[in-house]
Amino acid sequence: MARKSLLRRISFYADLDEADQQVIMQIEGREQQFDKNTEIVDAGQELESLLIVKEGWAIRYKTLEDGRRQVLNVLLPGDMFDLQVLVAAEADHSVKTVTSLTGLSVRPSVFRKLLTESGKLTLAFWWMQVQEEAFLREQIVRNGKQTARERIGHFLLELHRRVLITGSGSVDGFRVPLTQTVIADALGLTPIHTNRVLRQLERDELLERTNGWILFKDQARLAEISQFDSSYFHLDAFRMRLGRG
Image (tube, rainbow, N blue to C red):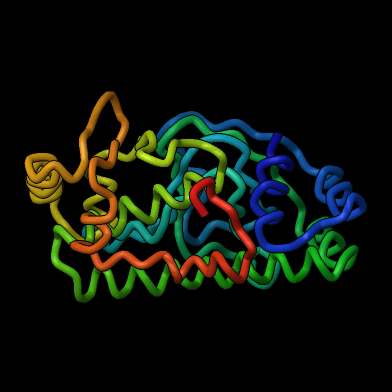
């Protein structure tokens, strides 16, 4: 259930006792299911609740007047949106599923009450937002200064690390349901150039694409080429363990 996905994630950021865990597992909400390629939130839409992702992937994005799209980030199981419902009435960006998605819709008043139940929970959610901001800072640097090759390598390594947090994937790879168009829109590239770079990474034996999976053949080398340093995940601060540490 969505509560378990959320509990798994925030447990990385705080040592929750049984009472804290029960608070999470008893969050009042309504489960919702969305088909693939469904607009969950439209920019300018009045917000009434936040959603905790149980299963599936989605993207946050903004669209320019001429139709060009900038993907801001990717939402995975355990992620929440939109917390801005706590302070704003209207969404300032859109959210769209890239797979079928199941989530728990929670009223703002319920979430505010949850934050008053435990100082540990409040701290854990605060750390989650710190990490979210870190991802956005990396996105700015990635798109502003890195080459296409560096951007794609960095983006895939970041997603892989995040997928491991959800309990999916393996140490060597993960299933990527994102189209090349979505990856291109996230990285300020064209789909054609994105495809060209991915094929070159395969020829260089850095990764392999198989049945929707990205398999890393030399993560250390790809990380070096992409200047990927996972310290911005603040893993030590979160006391997180991802199999290999």
